[in-house]
Image (cartoon, rainbow, N blue to C red; front, side, top):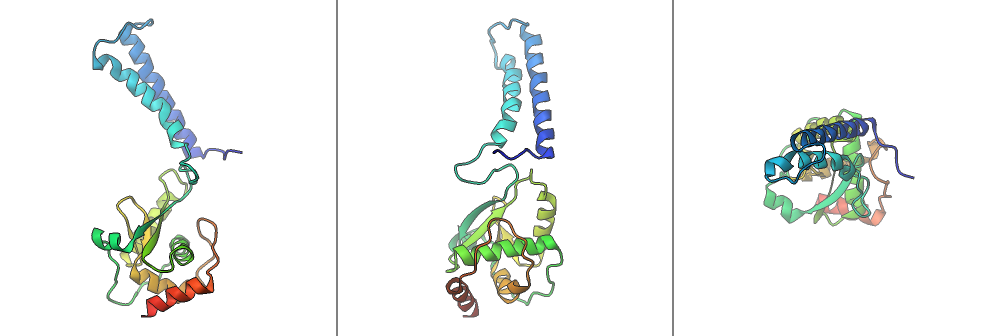
Length: 205
């Protein structure tokens, strides 16, 4: 069964369809209630705007293959270590972390990144990345917590807004993951001893 749309999405959809109706009415006023053939792009501009506003809420609800619903759910991805270096994203924090995460959302971000990094990419040649979309109810809190973690040097961000752990973040998580609250996005992956041992060994080299 399809998930019930969020209140924010319902408001967004209503606004889009009101705007669609407005532009369609303007189109009919300009070309008559039995529209004649448009002769310029100006004649078509209102019809095009009406169509765009009409389909925008529909497009935003589409599912991309087997990915989760892009309306509210987090989207996961990955980025190679070489690409991180090429983009100039910070990997190292030269001094010890002086400031611990202090909100549940900060811990939720770190717990998600650490759990998926160890579970999926224990060789550390690829970084697990994820983001929330703007329609998610947690988005503003998520972004604020992410900005604080970036300020502390624990995570960084790709050019499409995906968070990933820095080397300092990996070091921090390796020493503190046992104390993290259990809350996280996506399905929890057991930290297999082989994977965990490999990550801890690499970080201690």
